[in-house]
Image (cartoon, rainbow, N blue to C red; front, top):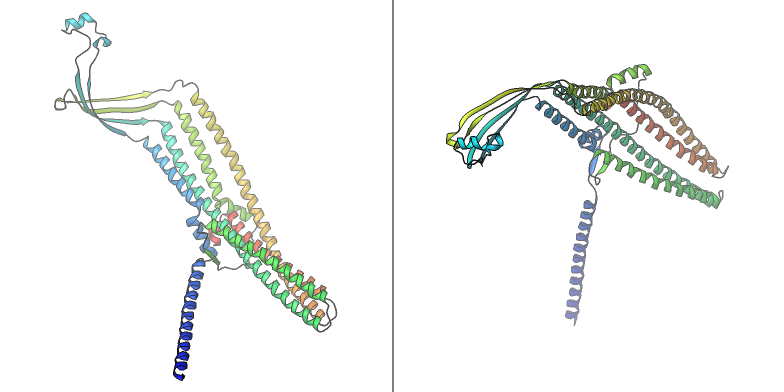
Length: 461
C-alpha cells in the first residue's frame, strides 16, 4: 500500500515537472515570437542631420531628377540642330524589273517603226543600282542661328536645374526645421503634463490636509486633461511634419526618421540691405537663367528672320548601275543648289511676328524676376531681424513665466490663495514655451530664406 502511494506521488511529481517544463518551453517560444514580431514591426531608423537630409534630397528629389532629364533633352536637341550643318551621307541598293512607254517621252509611232519597234512599250528589262549620296548645306544662316539657339537652350536647362536644386535645398531645410519645431512642441507638452501631474498631487495633498477644496483638485485635473489633449495634437503634427520631410527626401515612407540636429539660436552678422541686394544680383541663378532665355528668344528670332536669306547647298552621288550586277558601270553626279525664298503665303512673316512677341515677353519677365529677387531679399532681412528680437523676448518671457509659477505654487502651498493663480501660471508657462519654440523656428527659417534670397544656400549648410 505504501509502495503504491509512493509510486503515485512520484508520478504526480513527474507530471508536474513535465507540465512546468512544457509551460516554460511554450512561454519561451511565445516570448521569442512576440520579440520577433516586435522586431519586424519596428520600422528601420534613419538618423539624419540637416546637411545629410539636404544631400539626400538632392540625390533623390523628383524635381531634380526631372530637370536632369530636361538637360539631356536640350543637349539632344542641340546635337540635332548641329547635325543639320554637317554632311548627310546615305547609301542605297536597288534592283527592279520594268517596262517603259517610249511614246510618253515624245517618240511618235512612225519614228518607233523606223527604229524597228512595233510598239511604244518596251519589253521588260532589269536595272540594278548601288549608290552613295551626299548632301551638304554650304551656307544657311537660318540653320546656324537655330544651332546657336539650341546651345543657348542647353545653358537655360542647366541653370534651371541648378535653380531647382537650390529650391529643393531650401525647401528641405525648412521642412527639417518644421520637424524640429514639432519635436520641441511634443517635448513642451510632455513637460506641461509632468508639471500638471505634480500640481494635481499637490492639490490632493493640500485637500487631505484640509487647506484646499475639491474644486482646487478638479481644476488641476481639468488642466491635466487639457495638456494631454494638446499632446495628442502635437504628436499628430510631429508625424505629419515627418511625412512631409520624407516626401521631399524621396525615401521610403516606412523609414523612421531620427533628427540629430536641434532647434537653436546661432548669432548672425547683419549686413546692409544694399550690400545683400548686390550679392543677390550676382549670385541668383534665376537672373542668369532669364538672361539666357532672352538670348534664346533673340537667337530664335534671328533664325526665323534668316529664312529670308538665300541658301546654298551641295548634292552629289556616286555608284554603279547596269542591266545586270556584273555589267554595272560607275556613274556620278554633283551640283550646287542656290535657293532664293520668294513667297510662302505669309507663313514666314507670321512666324517672325510670333517670335518677336516671345522676345518682348522675356524682357517683361526679366523685370519681374529682378523685382522678385529684391522683394525676397528685403523680406528675408526684415524677418531675420524680427525673429532675432523674438528669440530674446521669448527667452525672457519663459523665465518670467517660470518665476510666476514658482510664486503661485508657493502661495498655494502656504494656503494663502486657491490654485487659480497656479493654473493661470501654468497657462503662461505653456504659452511662453510655445513662443520660444515659434521664435526659434522663425529665426532658423529666416536664415534659410535669406541664404536662398542671396543665392548662397550652399554656404549655409
